[in-house]
Amino acid sequence: MSRWEPNARGRLEQAALELYRERGFDQATVAEIAERAGLTERTFFRYFADKREVLFWGQGALTELYVGAIAAAPDSAAPVDAVAAALEAAAPVFQERRELGRQRQSVIAANPGLQERELLKRASLASAMADALRKRGVTEPAASLAAEVGVIAFKTAYARWLSDPDQQDLSRLIRESLGELEVMTAGRD
Amino acid sequence: MSRWEPNARGRLEQAALELYRERGFDQATVAEIAERAGLTERTFFRYFADKREVLFWGQGALTELYVGAIAAAPDSAAPVDAVAAALEAAAPVFQERRELGRQRQSVIAANPGLQERELLKRASLASAMADALRKRGVTEPAASLAAEVGVIAFKTAYARWLSDPDQQDLSRLIRESLGELEVMTAGRD
DNA sequence: TACTGGATGTCAGCAGCTGTCATCACCTAG
DNA sequence: CTAGGTGATGACAGCTGCTGACATCCAGTA
Image 1 (cartoon, each protein chain N blue to C red):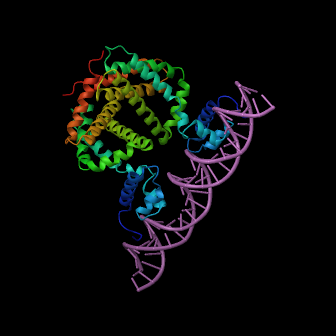
Image 2: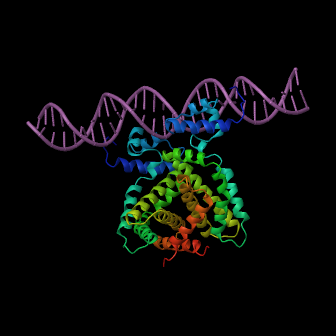
Image 3: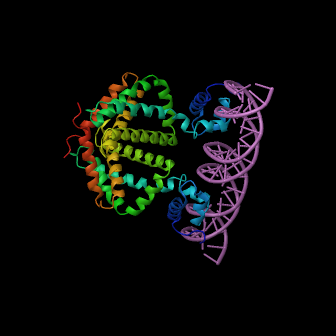
């Protein structure tokens, strides 16, 4: 394995996920990850801002997908419906990598630091979707609230979809979660 | 300032907030904080799990307040209403320390690491409230969704209350946010 | 006075992360 | 074919957050 092997980032991602699963996030050192990928610790930090980020890289591209879908929603769509359309547009990306998703989630679930990072990613997704809604003319606080509600619905649906092997259709679960939220908040005085 | 001055934790909290504001979170070292408080770095880490936690200590007691209020809500109250009652029950705690809240938030807003920690605290609050709802017989996913919705409403209301000096009544803002959420999710098909 | 327990100090050490500079592979112009 | 340029990687030094282990100190109590 000489210098300049292709796909350094991918090798680092894979090595990290493996080591985090084998010995736990805290017990795996960055030096070990880099070694397994045939690189040095310094190079790891050139690709990823920190030891956690290696599990979350790719969120950026996903965010663009959500934002694009919101922008593409028909003018007549209510804020929550535009968000719902975006969530469903992104669903296939997850459907294609269910097993990888499961592995990632089990690692994250075992470490509070990783949960923090995931929450931050979710928050910045909500913020990006709120931006996209504002560009459609939605005012605050409706834009932010719609985005946050969407993120909650997705989170709930995704967790159910990952944990129940019988569930096939992530989009359906997303719609169901949004429906439950509607029932929930309705009928107050 | 000899050993055994009282209120070590309080001195550390104050010194930390001061230093974080003076030079930024990253530039302030734990050794400096401890020195300003008349203690050592090692002692800092006996009181706080890490450098961030010093800004969030006290959440535990607050959580008990929320949970207690949910448990005390009348049996007839819907899940969201029990949560709303809890949020309003805790509001006075914040009303009493508006200026401290502002300072804390400005420090947190300037540092992603601190935002992560705040999100984690919020998530664990939501989780505790969902637990409390389940003890009232609320089933999933209604319990979790109601708790999450409540946290969003509080966050929104608190931000508005902090940033607008004209706003006096945090409870009123909380009710308004919940109302907006209701309008938001209503009327979908 | 002696003893005990909890709080604090001291010291050593690892691991995450960063700045800096050298080195290497590849590309292109001449 | 060679010289230089460019971007990726390595090597090294250093700071800081955080932890374990053990010593030390103060306050109360028998």
